[in-house]
Length: 382
Ligand SMILES: NC(=O)c1ccc[n+]([C@@H]2O[C@H](COP(=O)([O-])OP(=O)(O)OC[C@H]3O[C@@H](n4cnc5c(N)ncnc54)[C@H](O)[C@@H]3O)[C@@H](O)[C@H]2O)c1
Image 1 (cartoon, protein in one colour):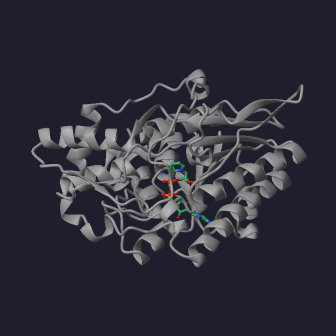
Image 2 (cartoon, rainbow, N blue to C red):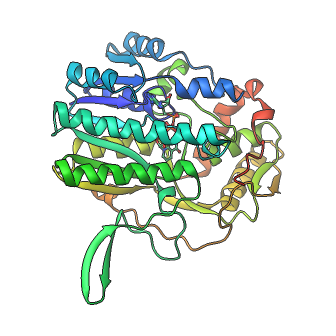
């Protein structure tokens, strides 16, 4: 297949380019380096040095003989994006190219405005480019489990059957996010649902939980192929952050009571989920939604797992409850359904002690690069 990966430089985008390329697909990656620039601006650069996208594609070609085409540009520039579609004629587009951080979206008005503009305009442009060039092209969009929030009922996969005054219908599952970033993802879903209904385009929206992990089979070939790995408060996800904190002797920052429960997955499973979705597309006129997680944990459970493995490896890991800078429930009901991707063929990698120990070993190699000032600054929701 011809696969267009938008956000190809990012934590998930670059491993995805390699994953499809390795399996014989033709890949074009696009990125505007927003994440790299923002990490420099906020002094929270990734743990491992990552060659730029063109250099990484070059390393990949030297090692495997496979070519990944790259284009540097901004998908909110419609003419740029349209030219990409006309030149490449993708059969599927994997859409990662968004501002992906809740704290970033809460820093100030300008970053909130950027988040809304970047995320919604990018998604709108993709819908238009698909309609104008090939409405059969399948959009695989990365959403987030955070769209649902923490309702006091089970979270279904995208949709909810409602019976009201003796009549029945099916609607998008109610969404109520707890950050502006997550709210922009809800609006993305709504935008795509509108164009699915109106133009009959085909979309898979993946409600993904926080991802952890530093490597995939492809990135293991050479350290220059590793993903952009952030461990800071702005761009790091919780488990990745805890491992870096444990290695650098920084007490694990559990927010408030630590009962916040979420669904998690290994980066290797993100690769599988996106691949399974792209190679088994939704139908024209269908918005297909999967909850992309493999197991659920509370923050305290994660901290305890990291401490147990870290202590065994000789780190003296402390857990520290810090005042919660976010506005969120610290204890709540949480029971998401996530069988759709398993039905498509997902074989999960669960969070075992061995997986955690492997992550520790990689982080230990780069511990001299850890910037302790980036770990926690308390970006407040209020
Ligand atoms: N990493 C996670 O745990 C996680 C969890 C749930 C959902 N997601 C979603 O998955 C997607 C990818 O996440 P990630 O962790 O790889 O983030 P990332 O920031 O590492 O990757 C996104 C990439 O998109 C690029 N980008 C942003 N705006 C762009 C634009 N206008 N034009 C071109 N490129 C642009 C960035 O430079 C970056 O390289 C995001 O949409 C995010 O919301 C991620």
